[in-house]
Image (cartoon, chains in turn purple, brown):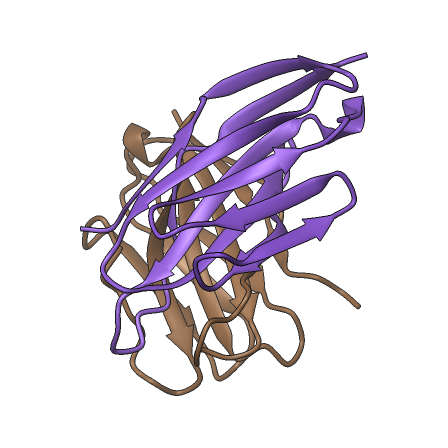
Length: 112
Length: 115
């Protein structure tokens, strides 16, 4: 069974304090790994898709990386507006399976 | 352009009543997905529609749950004889197609509370 585990569950940082969020996965045939941001009371907002080990993608203060077992979301010099829950999800398997399997998320708080 | 829309935003119902949730996908997106997010938990896949193909219902938790989609447009998720454990946020997503790896774009969700 495909599994996604995110750590830590919650993280508090001071503005400007860089850190990383972890997403570990166990899947049969990774096809894509997704990062989403979710603000309270809203639906997930797409950030990145990574397809193969060694791939990296960046957007503003965020950088996502992928290995064969895990992905990291690096946050550089975060601002209070980066506070949100960050969700990791995988699409795996063959035969056209399209569902995403999500981790439980990391709740990030950036204090000014 | 317009994103995925869902209605109602919030729904409070009594145990045992039926509820119907609606999703309007992004125009031109042929694939549509329903997920459930219980408080403090990750999203759980419920059902997937792609064009006129048979839907993937593998995530529906019981036969009280059903969903329909007409063509490549609106979808409705129906929960019959609601139970308190059905309380959750129900999220709809759509993608351009069901082939290869497609980004799923989510709506704002319907918050369901069963009393």
